[in-house]
Image 1 (cartoon, helix red, strand yellow):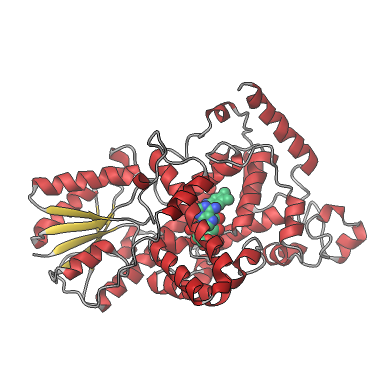
Image 2 (cartoon, helix red, strand yellow):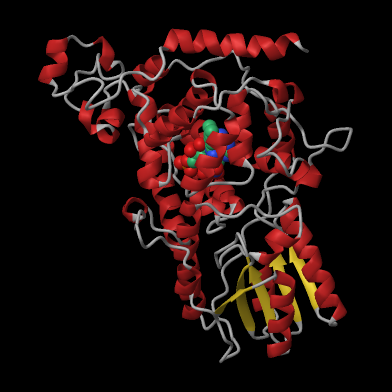
Length: 483
Ligand code: FAD
């Protein structure tokens, strides 16, 4: 009897434990993706609705998955509705013998999966759940109170101590399927914007899908990895893997990355240091997901409760200036414009713009987290809130609140020739390197010869750095005294 493979954040054929097992049984396989808006409203805790950029990515990724499945004789069925009833209906239509899926170690997804399991069991249909999109399941790394570790370094040591994760599984070469199964039309799901079509920058920047993810990994290991440690903090260089959205949608698995990187290190021992650094970044992804497993409301609640009393400012005008890249700080504006255009932002810039919002503008980290959630193609339920809380100082293993990034020095240090600012803030392109990170220090003649009218063609700083810093420290002192 046919087996249904329920796809979620694992839109790939290789190293897909559920698909691998289904294919190896020799039975017909029907791939299914469910658009479930009903379970979200009916059953708390709910999976978070996708933002605009991730909806766009999902549409491309589903198309790529459908093509890859069809190329080996399989099929991808799209259906809408509460997952449990959609799967039960499809199972009865095709007389399925079993439903397989990979785990997502997040409370809302597991709650829905349990519902699916019990609905199927009551219809006499077997379900089987396989390891998910983590190197190590959260239950494997706990402290003595049976909680996720709150500090990265011991977490990473423990993870490494568990040894290499299992080797990735190959993609099935051939599938048999069931013909004539009704599927909804992806276009009807309206995942992509049309009026206005704001996705041009995403199309220019990205090719979603498993094949593109594999190609990107190969290119990174061939060309980028040997300078990773030096280049990873430089937004003006193409120095990181840019695999995060592919990982977000499971177009590539972390253990595929792990083993490919280890293999590269074994081939060339000079790469060892860069590869360890790269793997530790994957470790951060795990760390954030393990936290999320314990703290499902990570995007809503301060992990350190004394931050509940923080005197955040409600300042819609400042928030808008930040979102649009019009704060008057070139490095902040470059980061925010890169995000708006391409759905991504370099990690160093994410730290700088997040610190600026939370500290210079005193705006609640949740407003920034939500903006990132809507605009990032890699918006991740664990990494996004965990990193925001890290910057805000309210999180686990957080940077102390009083460490305020200086946007001028950050620009000068990590974009020393101003290439990143020139690319994303073209109205400043004619300024010299020593002025580009602080145009307000230029003389009227220098501004005029660079074609800039400060306050008109480019804003004055929304807040003075020194005053902003002092104001942030004063606000923090108010909650610190209470503890
Ligand atoms: P590489 O340097 O090539 O790293 C490889 C992989 O390691 C990444 O793809 C990612 O999966 C993981 N990784 C790297 N840094 C981190 C980190 N600090 N935390 C968790 N995982 C990491 N990353 C997301 O994937 N989704 C998010 O929603 C997200 N939001 C963030 C918000 C803020 C405020 C900050 C400071 C960071 C955020 N990050 C997020 C982490 C990081 O910025 C991105 O993972 C990274 O920029 C992706 O680029 P890359 O794939 O080229 O990274």
